[in-house]
Amino acid sequence: MLSNPAAADEGRPQVRPQTEGWTQPTSDDGRPLLQFKQPRVAQPKTHLADLTLSERAAKVKELGLPGFRAKQLSTHYFTHFTSDPEKMTDLPAGQREQLVAEMMPPLLTEVRRLTTDNGDTIKFLWRLFDGALVESVLMRYPGRVTLCVSSQAGCGMNCPFCATGQNGLTRNMSTAEIVEQVVRANEVIASGGLGGLRRDGGHNAERVTNIVFMGMGEPLANYKRVIASVRRMVDPAPEGLGMSARHITVSTVGLVPAINRLAAEGIPVTFALSLHAPDDELRDELIPVNSRWKADEAIDAAYNYFVQTGRRVSIEYALIKDMNDHAWRADLLAKKLNARGRGWVHVNPIPLNPTPGSIWTSSEPDVTDEFINRLNDAGIPTTLRDTRGKEIDGACGQLAAEGDEDEGAEGTVTAGGPGRRPGASESIDLRG
Ligand code: SAH
Image (cartoon, rainbow, N blue to C red):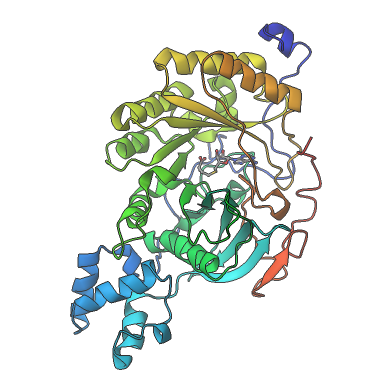
C-alpha cells in the first residue's frame, strides 16, 4: 500500500465535474439551479397514513361512523397491508366501501416492476394520482429487508452525477405516498414476491425491516412530510408500522438548517450526509447546494447530529474516477472528521453508478482500496457500500422514473427487459 499521498496521486489528473449528454439548468447568475420549493402544490387526497390515530378517529366520526372504525381500518392497512374493502370482513358490509373511499384513496399505481435474475432485488415504478412517476427499490439481504424510498417526484438539487436531478423537481410526495411505498412492498413480500434467502436459509422475512431515504428526491427539502412519514413508520401498530427508528436512514445532500432541526426532533433515525468531496473547490461543482452550505458547515451539522442523538453518522462518498478519489482527498476527509472527534462517524464510499449520458466512470479498484485504507488507517471506519440493482437501473443515483414504452403494463419483467434504458448500464463497466 502506498502511504505517501503525493506518490499515490502521481500522474493522476483532476477531472472536473462537467456534464456530458445533458445540460445542467442554471439560474440567471449562471449557477446550477436549486429548487427548494415545489412548482406544483397539488397533493393527493388525505389518506389515513397522513394522520395520527386520533385524527383518523375524528375524521371517521365526521363521516357519521363510530370512531373505533379508524382503528380497524388502521390495522388492515398497517398490519395486513390491505386497502381492499372486500377483505375487511370485521367492518359492516354497508360501510366498507365508503370508509375505504374516504380514508384510503388510491395513492400509488404500479406501472412496472423490474426484478433481478436471482429475485432478491425489485425496482417498482409507481404513478401518483397526478401522473408523476416515482420509484422504490426493495432488497433482501441476509437477515434484513431494505426498502429504498422516494420522498419527492424528481429532485431540485441538480447534482450532475445523479439521474434523478436531471429533470428537476416535480413535487413533494405526501406523507402517505411515502408510507404507501413501504406498505405495498410489505404486501409483495407477504405474498412471496421477493426472492432470496435469509441467513438461516428460510424465506419468510415477512416485511421491510430497514428503510433508506435514498430514492428520488432530497428528503430534507420535504421536511415536514418526511418526518411525519418516519413517525408513521415508527409508531406501533395500528397507528403505524412499528419499525425501529434506528433502522431508518435519512440521507441528505447537506441542507444544514434542516439537519439541525432533524437532530432536535427526538427520533433516533440513522443520519447520512452525501459529502462526495471534502474540499469546497470540488464540492462547489459537484454538489450545487454547496453554494449555500459549505463542506465544513455540512460536516459540522453531521457532527452536531451525533452530539444531539448519540447516533453514529454516515458519510456517503460516490467514488468518481480522477475526480474525487485522490489519496490526498481521503487524507483531508480523515483530517476534517478527526478534527471534530473520534468514534462519531463512518464513511461509506460507493462506486459511482452510471447515469444516462454520463461519461464519468467509477474509480479503479486499486484507487478505491487506497482511498478506503487511508481512512481506516486514520481511524475512520470505512466500508465500501454494496451496490444493488445496477442491472435494473435501480442503484443509487439511477432512479429517473421514466415511464417508457411499456408504461401501463403491469407485471414482472427481468433485468434487460423493456424498462432498461439503452446504454445506461452497458456504457461503463463498474464491476472490475
Ligand atoms: N438527496 C439525498 C438522497 C438521494 S440519493 C442525498 O443526496 O443524500 C442517495 C445517495 O446516492 C446519495 O449519497 C447520492 O449522492 C448517491 N448517488 C447519486 N447519484 C449516484 C451515482 N450515480 N452513483 C452512486 N451514488 C449516487
